[in-house]
Length: 71
Image 1 (tube, helix red, strand yellow):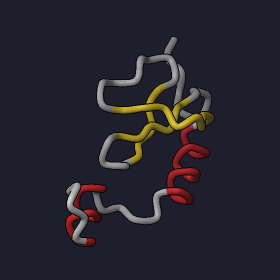
Image 2 (cartoon, rainbow, N blue to C red; image 1 turned 60 degrees about the vertical axis):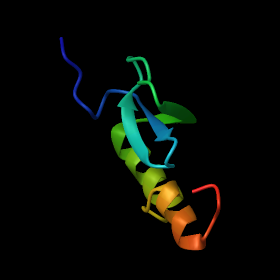
Image 3 (tube, one colour; image 1 turned 180 degrees about the vertical axis):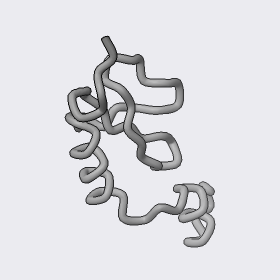
C-alpha cells in the first residue's frame, strides 16, 4: 500500500552548490547530496527549506559574483 505525502517522512538534503531539496526518508540519499539532519512530513521540510535557503543562487555563482578565487 502506497503512503501519501502527508504520512510519509522526508529528509531535507543539500548538494555541493548549497541547493536544497526534499527526499523520501526510506530511500538512500543520492550521490552528490547530503542529509542536513532535518526530517519530517513533506510540508514541514518545505517550510524548513523556506527558512534556511535565503539565497537561491548556486554557491559557485555567489563566489564568482563576490570575486572569490575559489569559484
